[in-house]
Length: 187
Image (tube, rainbow, N blue to C red; front, side, top):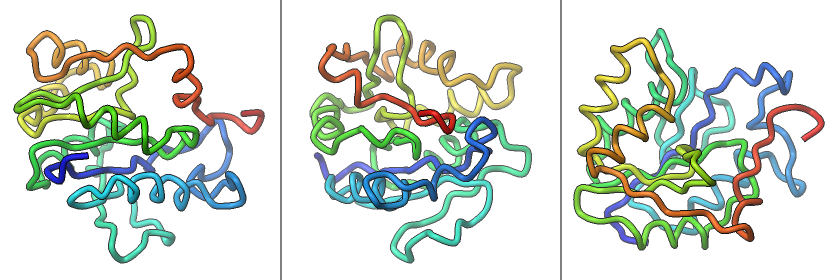
């Protein structure tokens, strides 16, 4: 992956359906946060950030914190704060609850980025915005979305695709398991 990419781990969800903080759930014998940071570290980004509502006790010292705004609007708030802070051209986003994602797949996404344009995986007509790479020039669009009534990343991604700030990469059947989310205890 290019060295001009920052990475952010989104770990600020309320985990209502799970009933406990997803970041501390064990996956392969390790807490999800440890597993996901390991995936990001394999990519050797310029910096690694974690987006959360408060500073998690598990955050390693070498991982910077991006706090959601007081009135958080989910991942959109963290995306806005991270894009405003990074000094690289692109930001790789990864959700805490997507433990089947691989460094190899994310690296292949990194090969798809272009100057001023990021990449978002698509399964059929649905974007996977929390395993995507955003260009820093998307900050204005993200801020506009934060001021509007719809805080959906799906809506934002559609706008960024139309504006050429993102391009879509189709997810093959063999890659679809990478995007499995852990949302409820049965998952």
